Amino acid sequence: MARPVKNRPPEITTLHGVWTLTNFAEASPRTYGWWIDNISDYPEIQDFSNWATKSKKEQWAFDAVEANKWLLKHFVYKN
Image (cartoon, rainbow, N blue to C red; front, side, top):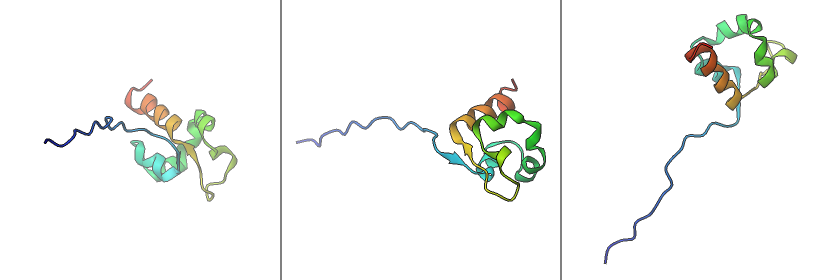
């Protein structure tokens, strides 16, 4: 008798959670240091992060889904 076939759902990579500035920099084409110096050039990042309310020495948090969409829009598709 044959073994039953396990029907597994296809693996779909989902993105969720919170990124630190390190994660954000790794996902972007720019370096961590570049973002520290130039993040104020992109005020729209305030919509999905807390960088405007924190100092450079405090931990910044970014909504991973929104940050990924923004990075794709600005650096991949260049809109």
